[in-house]
Image (cartoon, rainbow, N blue to C red):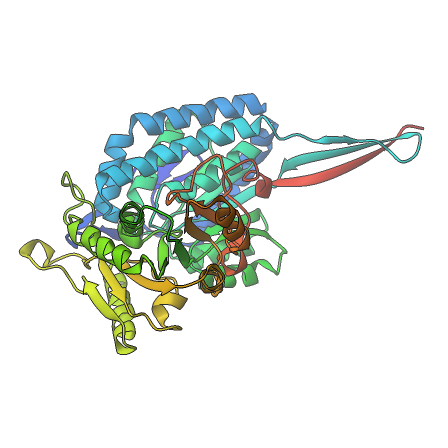
Length: 481
């Protein structure tokens, strides 16, 4: 086992205390590409203890000195992006250019929060009476824990780690066993950047067991989670006993509203390609497509053309635009969505099955799928799809489009395409989502807040507010007499 393909605790690479290991599977071939340590609660407890021992010195470090280490981490991630991208594509299945883009975006978060670390300002409050002074300070929460999903295996934990260490917190991260290798590569960058032992740590093991330790251990003061709404609910319940601070980036069911004043072919191309990015395995992926009835047929025709043109295959090959799904469960989930929709009258225009050819005999493959004649209330329009199935539905009025878009328990992201300024403002304000892409299918960025409304979570990552969840507010009243 490579030294750096291990857990990282207190500045050292290590195996699980139990000696346990788990395989990492290439989703394109079903081959085992690595064996990695797979521990449990004892490893998480050790990492939390390490983070607690490191916290006092780290929080007292000058913010400019913390920032210098973070800048170095960003530089190293960028320098190693090409090699890291191959590792990521092998374990996740996304094409190499997408993996490289994710890694470069991850570096931006370390750079952004290095700067935010220097802007954690307090306040002097004019007192209401003589003889006192009023101060408001912001201080790091303490030891934090992070649990992230596999689909963006570096970016998702980095959003949490960079904000935490920028605030002066220490942190323990638990990546998914589906994609731990690129996270380990990223931790190699953090190690080489010079983070003191215990400031950043990562452990691997069963999600429920590791999360249980994070929730029950009083050393951990905050938990940040990216994943499904069902798991998020469970973690929120578990946080109640210690009134532990939590932030959650949960499921989504993102609508796309296409109005008739756009270049239909251009918008159909952009939205369809965005839909199938990372095979639809994106938390803010467009899920429900509502197109004005006057341009509906044109949009559908172009979407089908684009879906059929996408090159699917080994994500390490040049020119491939669509890789495999993450595992067999994901394939069966897509089959279930499609079968349920067909049973209610929906039609498949393209896709809807495993692709043909000897190269697809092994691996977790599913064709990019476009469906129409979608009835109301089916699973495809009510649940988080997280895969390459694209339902397209017509609407007639702006009011109807907004009502259809908001008719969901989720509220992470929504998309609007129009050239009408008044409509753009009206619809953007009416949509109940934390992120609105207005003529933009790629709104996520380090400098802006990322997070949802309703059952899509609480808290924000990125932007000037992204550091707030890792800070406590302290008020000091000083008597001068």
